[in-house]
Structure formats: C-alpha cells, structure tokens
Image (cartoon, rainbow, N blue to C red; front, side, top):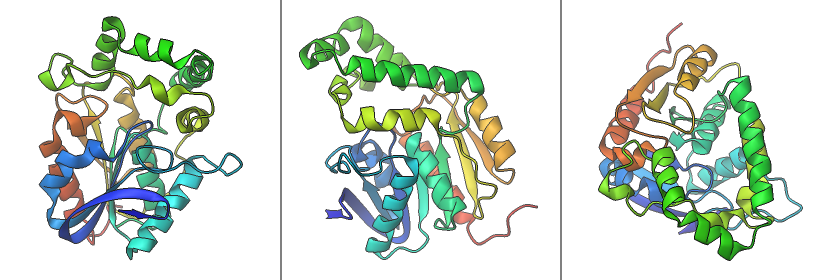
Length: 269
C-alpha cells in the first residue's frame, strides 16, 4: 500500500500504532514486532522517503529530519490518524520524539534514538558522514565486494546485533549500495550527524529504550535523553544491540504496549 509517497504494510485492528525504521533501513525490520502487536492494535510500518520502496524527495527538495517529520505527519493524516502511538528506532526514534513534542503522538517509544550524543560522539558522526560521501566515489562493485568480505561482515554483526554469533546474524552485511553518489543515505546522513533533540517538552508518555549491547550509539545517550525528557520511562533491553527489533521482537512489542497503556494518565511533575 502507498500514501503520501510512502509505501507501507498494515496489520491488525484497534488502537493505531506507527512503527518507524532507522537510517538506511526499511519497514521489514518491524515485521516480527508488528505480528506481536496486531492483536488489539492497528499497526502500520512505512518505508521512510528514500528507503525501501518509498521514493526519495526530488534533488531540489528539502530532505532533513524536519522534512521527514512533516512527511510522516501528512502520512498519518492521510490514514485518518490524529495522534497515533509512535515507536521508532534510531532515526525513527528521533522522528517519533519530534512528533510527540509537536503534540501529534499519543505516546512515544524511542529505541536508541539519535539526537542525544555527546560532543565527542557528534564529532565522530560528522567524520563518518564525510566518509560516506567519500565512499560514494568508489565504484559500486568494489564497495559491494568489500562489504561482503568476511572482515566487514564480522564488523557488521558486531555493530548491528546484540549477539554477533546468533544464527540470524550469520549473513548480515552492510548495504554498500546505499552509498552511491547522491543517494538518499548520502543526502541524509550529514543531517543525521548534526541532529540534536532540542524540544523543551514532550506532552505524552515516553519510553526511552536502549539495547545494553548497542555498539553504534552508546547507551549513555539514554541518560542524556532522560535529562531532556524527565518524565520518560527508561528501559534497558538486555542482550539487544542497535536494532533491538531484530534481537528480541517480543520484548520490544511488550515495551510498546506498556507505553501505549499509560496514554491518558497524568504525566509526572
């Protein structure tokens, strides 16, 4: 299905829940979680613009975090949703929190959201963003072959999975095709690297959940998120890496349900 230029999948019936993936990922990462949520929830997982099957904005169009938030808001309106529950991972977590800050979410479950890194981590992210632009100059067959090599596969497993030795991680590799010149990933990554969550208030229940084995965004970001959003509930997802939906979809679904249940209750403070 498609609306507002975003391709999406839908499950179940009931209270609406929107699931947002991270940078360079796609809606399929949420499938296992969605199946757990489908009983009692109307669950939608879209491909963000430029990823999966959703086309990117035009070359002259704005393409940054704020533009993605606006697009997702229009997408929800086209579904007839005013204030859905929103869960997101990494980039998707930041979009979820921004929607919550604007009053467009009934609750937010943010899994390892970007926007809460230290100054040193921000500098490192900007270096990686420059590296992505340089990598785009390498011929794609060379990039793909390198990404499929045993050393880089091992790095991908360690960076993206809580348990690198798990059978489900055996064939995991970085997607080198996203690094082509002018690709959505290359266009968006500098904005992701520079992004910081600055909203003064998020007027809905919030859960900040972080994998205790997240090797991409250090879990110290959770403490900074709680300083910014004092009423947020903090959760450590044991044994999970940066993409906890792949490591423990049942636990992720349970935390989303718990956050949804608190909607309508008075916020602390």
